[in-house]
Amino acid sequence: MRRILATFTLAAAYAATVAPAGAAADPLDFLAGRWHCAHTVGDFSGTYVERFERTLRGRWLRQTYEFPATGDQPEARAEYFIGFDPRVSRVVRFGAHDNGMYFAMRTTSLTDTTMVFEYVLPGPGATATWTKHGGREYTIDGPSYPQNGRTVTEHHDCRKA
Image (tube, rainbow, N blue to C red):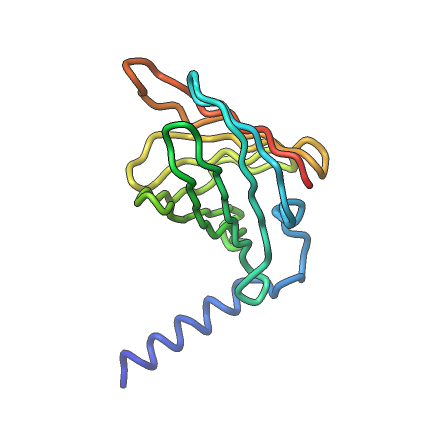
């Protein structure tokens, strides 16, 4: 009984500290909708579609990726949740891919036009910078990692559909 009461008390305290959905401008609102993206990683380049939609009482954005099949890779899908935590003025993002990969990250810098994410899982160290270019375009630079004996950096350019 004490454990149930403690859990309820913690949940109520958390709910009281998080702004209600729509209460203030959310720095992620511009992402809502469908996006067409192009990306390069080393010598590879391709396109994909992603969608952001509000979920869980509007407190989170659900992000879905759809990567088409390429010559040597099957179609791929991924789902993420991304949200702003006003208690610590930080954006968090976590999700999984249908190939078994998973990632969790948090912002270390957040401005009106940029979010610098630090990867927390599966291991710390990598970063990716999301840069907003008006309300209909954003880019992602990073992370960087070794691939085929050299270091490559991901670059994504996304435009609202």
